[in-house]
Length: 590
Image (tube, rainbow, N blue to C red; front, top):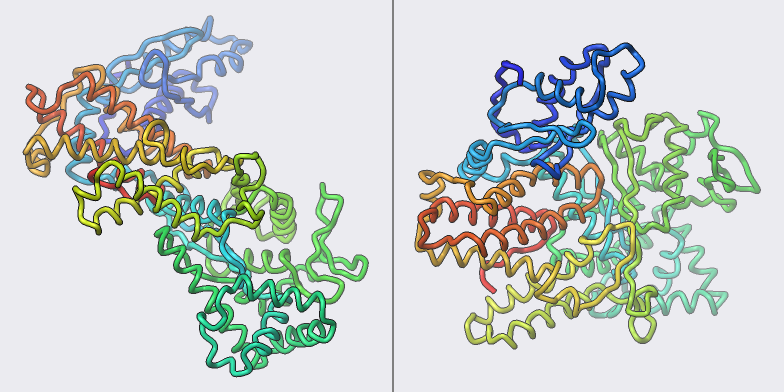
């Protein structure tokens, strides 16, 4: 290795720190090939490996190079690698792969520092500083259903991971609170409750049923339909009576949504379609002035290269639509809120709509042509929630499943399982209720997040509440068991953090330590790919590594008790941070 010393404190991202070292080595090894990025991956024959030799060989072999083969380049990379306390040793395998073994002492020191300074010192640093995450987005006067579950849970986790990575996140609930359907709702409200000021949630009752009744009357009674259409005009002109009725319907609906968000512990700031509506005309005017908007069959449209149908921005009746609202919201987020990254979490069925309006925004010059350059936009699509029949998950009466009912059912089943294990006799009713809720809701969230979001998943309470395998219940048990091990030791773990030392001499201790140190790069990968399942996989493997460690290394009463208790505590801390990022409440006993 080169003699240059590059001793660094742990920055949180192991892969990036190794990349910095190999970046120096690459410049010294192939000075005539600038801009070669280090290719660092977890290794088979070491902790990590550098995979540049093969690619470099294909570039330089015809240029009169001193190197005879890829392994020769690999040897040179090792020779030029700056000396660092991070690296214990390097070897070559296969066609020039450089296998890196990390220093166990350095690894132990990094974990000790985290225990003293906190898990936030391991937070990744992203190149983006501000983001909008647009998620959940139910429609006013309609129930939140199982489809909203995915958008709400995935969006919340993406927001949490970005916030942990020091990004300022605007969590946006783009509710459907504007449009022609409000004409029939308002008119039906006037008919049923002439004195709209006194209308309460209790009086209206089931808002979903209210919506269906008004829709039925709209479809069957021409006089009502005519009144409803006039009501839309009154509403859009700002008539105070109609605006008041609209606000009342929105308020009742909003209160229902709030109960679901509260249960899921999800925070959102509402900026619905009505917020952007007054701004749409100016945005259409701006797009027209750039020559993007054309007349087509009575409508005003933007033709997008690569799509057979145009993007309609003003309907033939002069009304606005999703595209006009979404373009206006994007403009506002870019120009007024100064967001660098705007992330939309909806089902994959809306992919074409997003592709078209993103391209329209590029044509307008709002976004760079390169979709990797900031400011940037991403559509985070997700698959359907399926039933046992592999079709869209519905109730037996073929109705869409209400989200509130699903949450109740998850908690009820969780409480039943705990009661069957006699926990109702061990715990207070409050403890039983809290833990049943944490486990039930956690199981629901984890089952959704652990699969790649672009595919659908089969909804099964039995599977998600199983205490074996890759489930939240298993992971919460694992965390509770670690807490129990620490408690049984009788030691003050906070005192041990300040005075104790960690050693990673046993293979299982070292494997657990390495996995702990890979936390930050995992969170970063989950953020940059917008894939929460990456973090779920990490968490599951962490619990597996802990199980191997605990079954082969005695903790309490051993000569290495202090070190191993600190490893237990570090594992519990990382697990809790993973739970937090996934929106799951940890439990300390089960």
